[in-house]
Length: 113
Length: 113
DNA sequence: TTCTTATATCCTAGAAAGCGGATATAGTCA
DNA sequence: TGACTATATCCGCTTTCTAGGATATAAGAA
Image 1 (cartoon, rainbow over the protein chains, first blue to last red):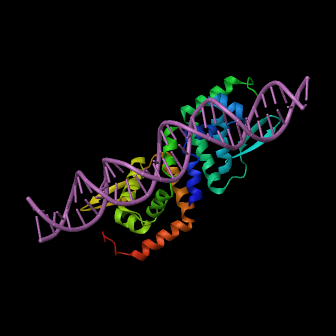
Image 2 (image 1 turned 45 degrees about the vertical axis):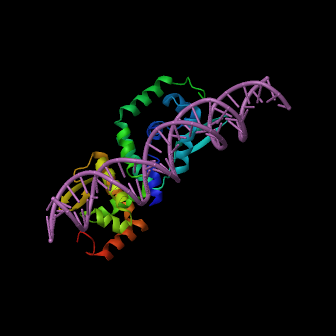
Image 3 (image 1 turned 30 degrees about the vertical axis):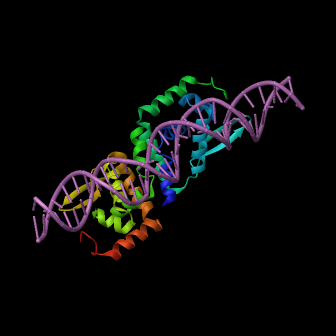
């Protein structure tokens, strides 16, 4: 039951939902992308990403100086069940749409491009 | 997005999950049932119940001195989607099973019986 | 009205979580 | 090696959440 609560807890914060919403549309993103799109200080972006990784939502892949985060392919059963629900409900959210728009407009101008 | 986060937040606490798990099996329960089964002080039980009511999960019905809580029939879309998932995953939880067992063993010996 | 009971709310303390600047780490390049 | 960069972690501060005893409210009974 604690595990279930922890999974829901990982979704109870707007910043983390925004990160997941982005990664539901983009294969993978590096920390600097997240910082730029969500306009977060580096430590804040990194902290949320590592939280989502610890809970099991995200995996990371280091390429040189950059670290790319993506959604884990084989999620835990509850998370696997929740994923399409997140996709559906976050897709309707104006905040998530705005973030995606901002991501597109940045194009390849970011640090890791 | 804030609304979505709030719904997940209402599920990020073990006590609230235990209450929902009970109400997924029992049509309705009064506060004293919850107190007895979860072994919570009265103010704690009442606080969590009113939290779940404010978020939209529960409705209450007063009968004399007692207040019976039950799961809302027409939930908000996200909650409606999450409900069967909760049913499924909470059903497998030993904690929830233990609570149900305790509820059965109390039978009609409670305050509101 | 007064007493009793079930529930809700108040209040303060403590725990947990988030924030973001500062610092550490890891990798690149010269 | 040393300078530089992207990311992670540390640390102090603030905010948010919870617990549970104390008090208030609401309803029934005498």
